[in-house]
Length: 128
Image (tube, rainbow, N blue to C red; front, side):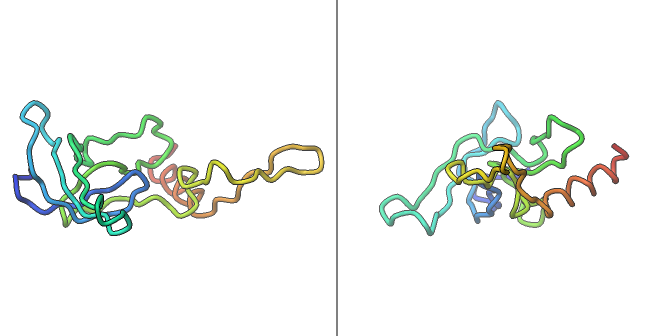
């Protein structure tokens, strides 16, 4: 388990990894940490990010067993592996993007080859 002052990896809300430092442990919830990291894309005056009660990736569970688990807003040890969001995952869709429709006005599904491949591999592995 992590200790105060340890380097870890923070996985943000879209699954991007950030090198982070543990600044505090939650004594009531094992595996929940306070982290600090630098966001290079934020303005200089607001690039230090402090996050409270970030859970370990082992605490993240998918509610639908037919889908793979992706770890978001979680931390992991530097040498731990995780499944990153595929580049065509629905969570990365722009909510303001125009919707493609056919001549009858029906929505045309977005092609998601990477995501569909991960879902198919997960289902094959778990015989779902």
